[in-house]
Length: 212
Image (cartoon, rainbow, N blue to C red; front, side):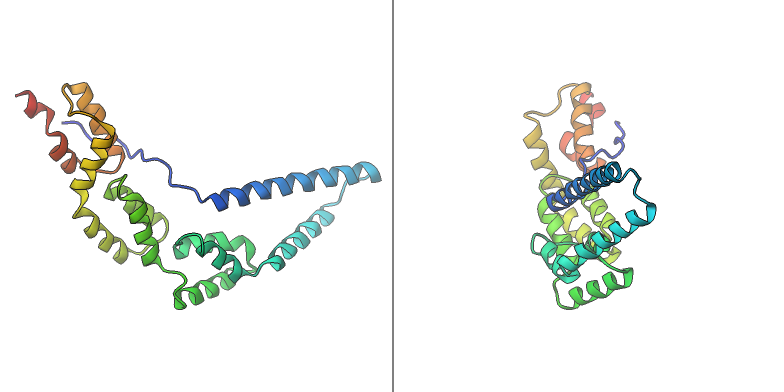
């Protein structure tokens, strides 16, 4: 019997907004370095550490003043569902303190703008047709969804695991394995998508038994 390989799922999808923000931050850092270099050449003296710190502080203050923390949160939530943990991480660089972030998250939960339950179901709707229960549960845990909610999701997913696995298999392979090599290839692919050995045996059978 072939043992399941180490987990090898595709990276979790990255929010395009996060990518844009990161690139913009990189451009701003490069521009700031270029400006300091130019000023240093004109004055004949390097910029002091104190000047650099002051400039960074002023820039951060200006950035936060441009958009309130709540406005940022609602901007994120208007695009898709977020878990509390994920949204907190996104807001932290724009807040004055962790307490400010936590207070806002509490308010958003109370006002029904933010919900780990809705986030969990959005992940299921987005991923269930492509991966197994194991992958989805791992993603939910990484986003801070609590054990109670993940157990509910697990029960729901396990009820459809075999059918979903058959659909994933049929999209990738045109025929059942006819030799040990093709069996191993199909088994590894399906296991890497998070489907259990029990489910894979129901789809692919057991190669040793097939040989007999």
